[in-house]
Length: 283
Length: 169
Image 1 (cartoon, rainbow over the protein chains, first blue to last red):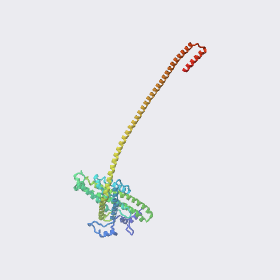
Image 2: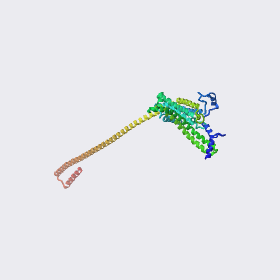
Image 3: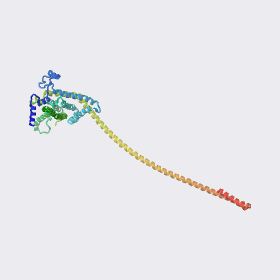
Image 4: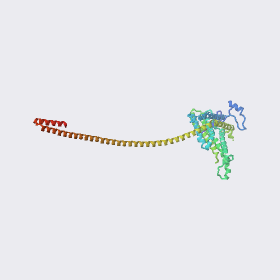
């Protein structure tokens, strides 16, 4: 047993002539700037300088994955919109109904409980977009050869920052620029607590999207790490018999990942809706 | 902060900005091309379904009311029909009894009259016979008185008279 642990440890840490497990995991789960082909050319010619000195806009593998997910959204929903609009009594096509069910799900479970009745229609497009974009980002990584865009803190942070901006923006529009910041502190607290409460509420405001960022990232990364390690076990033990177990194990994790992809998209959209919806009223 | 620059936890500002740009472009396109028509169509359909359900409910109530009314009418007409039949039956009974009575009375009258006529005819015949007998007797007596009769003649007369009587009877 100790021998096994020792050998695993040496496999993980050894750089050696073979790739270590750490290298493999990192290779699969981290971003790379694309240097070859058409996109490599564009990177070389137009995007080589950093925008405002901080934003390295060179197109990376993850950016392409984002575009894949966005493209899938467009390919699915633009024709669906036309079909739903034309079928007055509801389409009989299973494909259309599948997406209609998910759209109704977003309406009934995500937007409606968190927004006042007459804002539901205005809020729907944003949450439909965030739900399906995150969902397809999560699912893209389950296709062999592609990667999970949401398994990167930069991507999840970008989406969570939009939620944060949404909270502040909607709050300032609905409650007034001053009213919103004043309304962060709950009513009815004693006056001497306010100097203490205000920083706490400000921190809380930023912790909400931070939690969104980390939750989505960690959930989407963890499953991939486990799948990669299951597969790596075969190479580690140099045995076909281990393959049976590790393929079965990684298949199970894969199915779990499918479930997690839906759950995390739902959670991300629901929490965003909850945060933005609650910023409409002072508490 | 070192951990944010390398490895799994690296936050790449460029990727972050690309994410925001990609998402906002996607949001704009889908908003115009997909979500707006879809949400409108679904709302319109929900509205229509609600209206349909409401009108169906209204129709159901109306139907129930009509059904109750119809049942009521059916019950009433059934009662009426029973009453009419009973009335007709009793009328027929009464008429039958009346006719029977009348027929009986008439028959009795006819019999009575026949009997009366028969007895009248009998009386008449008897009275006629009586007068005949008287005439015959008178004739016989006159003949007896008028000529001396031998016993044979006498006998012949009597027999003749008797035959006459018999034929009259």
